[in-house]
Amino acid sequence: MNWKDTPTRTIDVNGVSFAYRELGTDSAVPVVFLHHFTAVLDDWDPRVIDGIAAHHRVIAFDNRGIGATGSSVPHTVDEMGSDAIAFIRALGLEKVDLFGFSLGGGVAQMVALQAPDLVRRMVLAGTGPKGGGGINEIVKVVAIAYLKAALTLSDPRNFLFFPRDAEGKRAAKDYFKRLKERTTGRDKRISLQATGAQLIAIRAAGNSKPDDLSAITQPVFVVNGDNDLMVSSSNSADMARRLPNAQLMIYPDSGHGGIFQYHEQFVPKVLEFLQH
Image (cartoon, one colour):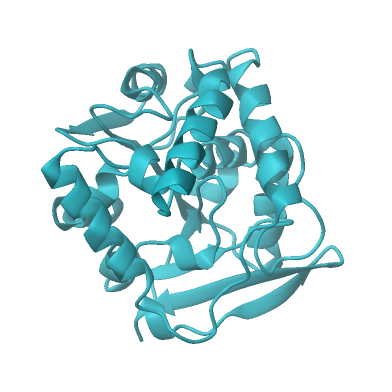
């Protein structure tokens, strides 16, 4: 089964109905996907999900207050991490690999810090550490992108995820085409309340005291583009330096969505990383 045909399921987590999708080959340690600012299940790139699901059990979900999951979005990344832990444990899982993109990468770090025994390996893409320089500027960056999107009747991720050169525009067009492959059973869009709460959490994380990343001893694959407007690529490099067991990959001529622009190269790297 491919991502575009995977049914949405629900599970009760402490009285809240969590929406999730599960696919792939049975593997001893499943890969749990944690998503970006404003994203719901349908915003995962099918090429990335299907590529990893060809060799692993993959689980993607809407965290609290997102998409079809009930309740409301918490105002801190720490709480988002606690919610993710509760969801993973509600599925009866004792060990997982985490794939965190953007805000999801921040949540993944919280999971690893709060429940280290739960995590085997992590992929952190387009993300940085708490207290990273410039992260609290995200409101301004997002506002400009949304304004440009409104003026051009387009998706703001055109401006946030991809360079505005010919190659970047082509990559963006291909990415949005892939996101539309699922035609039935699509997820609910994110609410305005949820969007606002996520922004509050992101700004708070940017202004927070840095976490002691030396406590995360699991292997971590850190990835970004070389010109990320949302999370400075230097923050990803700084995070990789502070993690005791990290490897860093920076893709050229790309931005926040570098892993989608370079999905053909990225997916094999992730599979190799998760094999060990």
